[in-house]
Image (cartoon, rainbow, N blue to C red):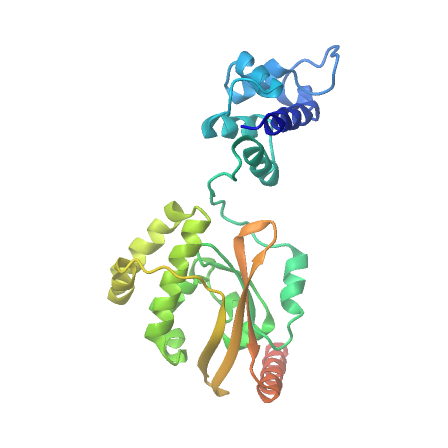
Length: 280
């Protein structure tokens, strides 16, 4: 490991421990020459030897193991970006992804969705649970607000809802694409363990899903064209694009744009009609 990288890791660790309040962790504040935790206190919290931790700050002893880095991240209470930065300094690559189920989205992100008045937009997790949507998505795709939380899953809807199935012009092609993309997303986010229950459930309830899952196909989502049969608008075409949410690797924003001004006008009228019916 280059000397400059080692010293950068030591500087980073030293900086982070000096920012921590000893009293927060039950250590006596007393008189300290420097602010924050002492080296031996960080070592205690990370369950490593004080000598080894001291060597890390001094750039001695070689590269730490992944296990040691994870212990240090917990001991120093690093945020996820800080943990990733520490791995980059120590090993030259980010840590393996670990999936943390999202607790929702920020109001700011919801406002981004709502800024698309006639373009259906949703935000889904790596396990393809829909956690946010706009009015256009509720009118054209699925009104997720009427579903129990556990049913707001694209895989469950694709393979269990006759309404969703009949809306697809070529359901089998869409299903194959969804399963292959779902597999890639879950692996990328480190969520393989989290999807096992859902996969087992769908394999029991859908022979088609089981067959597609067994095929082990993997693909990326990117962008493309989606054709849907809508009960009021008939067969419609939407261009879709996928966007990563910065700072939230567990989330993907999907936006569907109408392919013509005429369709955009029809969608606007449908949304207005839905809102009037809701207020009535």
